[in-house]
Structures are given as structure tokens and as C-alpha cells.
Length: 375
Ligand SMILES: Cc1cc2nc3c(=O)[nH]c(=O)nc-3n(C[C@H](O)[C@H](O)[C@H](O)COP(=O)(O)OP(=O)(O)OC[C@H]3O[C@@H](n4cnc5c(N)ncnc54)[C@H](O)[C@@H]3O)c2cc1C
Image (cartoon, rainbow, N blue to C red; front, side):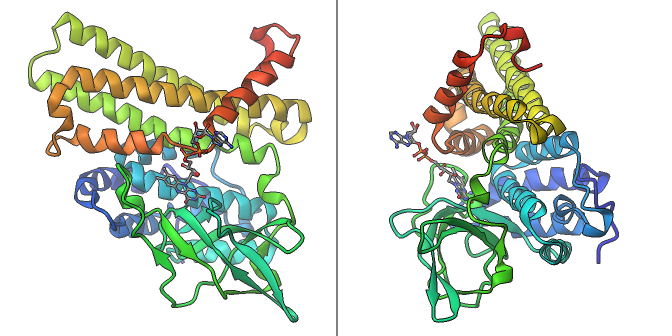
């Protein structure tokens, strides 16, 4: 068992890994790759165990700031690893919230032993179903865009039963080759191994079901939890600006007024994203948000708007950086090329129009002055 401070993520040993993770990222930029060594190093640093919160410590999870800085730092080092870690953290949050004590203890133990978790919800026409066969339950169907397919030891998935209710299931995987990465030929985020995974025929015991029907979409956690992918995106945005800054300085182009103006715009965009993410994280994780319907509604709206704001900042930074660096930003020898592809791909998140419109609808319903909306 690891001897780590189970309540802290942003530890010195975690921070020590980040440089090596960033250095390994370019070599992993290939179809079918996966950051196996990075995950093992994070496990050894206690980073995989901390989000599960040792049940014996009354399940105290990492603080909001600790989690936010960790997601941001990991996204800065490697966006594909950041995506995988975000999935792991999201799975931990669901198990902490809805799992029974034995389920929480078992998950914490597995994470301590180095198991990477994930949360796979996205599906195509052959979505995952929970089917009753006599007196037992089994799974049928597949998930798509499942990060770490074939590598994640403990994927948390959503599955519908015959009545149409949605459950969270932590299936016990067998040895069958269930992952198919052939369709994951993405522009960026190659090393996230976001492929298809079939669950056909896997038996489900009652203790493999986490929580009750509808818990996966339970608010405010479902929508407000989106701040976590925004934090990873923020890390990538900041890294891109830093890479552009180094490039301009190396070429002694930093005194050019056009370059300065674009760098100014890029810095504004990165800082805007940072302000949105920090506020979104605090509102989402605030105790009042968990306790009051009104506060929950406000936090959901804020995170929905933050998603659009961060996406806009990311797209702006991509444009400014590409225009400042020119064709060199599109050469595979330049780290900006890979980073730009990873960020552009990872900025694609579910239902962005709906998130913006729901945030807007909240604002339209309020009578309070704007300065009081998110106090
Ligand atoms: C690197 C990476 C890793 C991922 N890993 C995972 C994972 O581990 N687990 C998982 O569950 N998912 C994962 N996903 C999938 C992710 O959660 C989203 O499902 C996916 O990114 C959404 O992509 P999309 O742009 O096609 O979204 P969409 O929601 O399809 O949006 C595309 C466009 O269509 C619009 N749109 C959406 N719905 C409608 C509609 N009904 N009518 C009209 N327009 C509509 C949107 O507003 C947007 O303009 C991953 C995605 C990426 C990029």
C-alpha cells in the first residue's frame, strides 16, 4: 500500500513527474499509443489514489484548489494524459458520491495498487444495456470515444436497463480483447486511446452497480463537473502561449509591434480562461452549491458559460499563436504543431450549443443585477 498523503494531489512527487511527462509526450503522438509509463509514474506518486480519498479518513477528497491546480498542471504537461486523468478523477467523484462503503474501499484499494479508472458514457447506436438473463444481469453493447480503451483497468460506464433507467456500472473486465482503437484516427489527442469498447456478455453482480437509477445525470454534479475538463484545457492553452513566447524570443521577434499585439491578445485569452476556470471550480465545489437548489442552478449556469468562454479563449489562442509563428507552427518538428492539434481536438466536448443556451437562459430568468448573479 502506498504511503502517501491521501488527501493531497499537487504534491512534490506529482510535480516532479510533470517535466518527464511533457518530455515523453511527443513520442506518444501516434495512432494506437497510450502513456503507459506516465500512468505508472502517477500511480507511484500516489496521484491515482488521492482522488478516491481513503474511506478510513472519512473520505476527505482533495480540495477544490488542489484538484484544479493538478488538472491544469497535467493538461499543461500533456493533454492526452490530462484527459485520462480527468476521466479517472470523474470516476472517483462518482464512486465517492454514490458508492457504498465496501465499493469505496475496494476502489480506493485498486487505485492504490495502480489501477486507472475512467468514465465511459458516450455511445453510438449500439449503446450499453443491462439485460436480465434468468436470475442474473449481463451487459450488451459498446461505448465509443472511450479514453484508455484496452488500458483502463476500471472503467465506470453507464448502462440502461430494460425499463430504460440509466445506471452506473463498474464491470469486472475479463481477458477478452474488447477494445478496438482502429476508428481512433484523430487529428490530435492520439495517445488518449479513445476507442470503442464492447461489453457484450459481461456478467454484472449487484455490487458492481454504483448508486441508483439516474445518479449519473444527478445535478448539480453532472453539469457543474464540466469545470474539470475546462481546467485541463486551460493547462493546454497556457502551455501553447508559453511555447509561442519561447519561439518569438528565440527568433528575437519579441520587439515587433504586431507580435506584441498578438501576444497581448493571447495573454488576455489565457488569463480570461484562467479566471473563468478558477471561479467555475469554486462555485461548482462550494458547499452551498451542494445544499441549495438556487445555488446549484447558479453554479450550473456559470460552468455552462465557462465551457463556452474557455473554448473561445482556446480558439483565440490557437489563431494568435498560429499567425505569430507562421508556417513553423504547422511543422511536425515544432512542439506547437502537436499541442495545437491536441488542444483543437480536446476543445470538442458534448453539446456545446446547449451548454451556452442553458447558461444564457439562466441569465435571462434572473431579475437581480448582474453583479449579484454569482456572488
Ligand atoms: C480526446 C477525447 C476523449 C474522450 N474520451 C471520452 C471518454 O472517456 N468517455 C466518454 O464518455 N466520452 C469521451 N469523449 C467524448 C466526449 O465526451 C464527447 O462526446 C465528444 O467530445 C463530443 O464531440 P462532438 O463535438 O461530436 O459533440 P456533439 O455534442 O455531437 O457536438 C457537435 C456539434 O453538434 C451540436 N449538436 C449536439 N447535439 C445536437 C442535436 N441534437 N441537434 C443539433 N445539433 C447538435 C453541438 O452543439 C455541436 O455544435 C472524448 C472526446 C475526446 C475529444
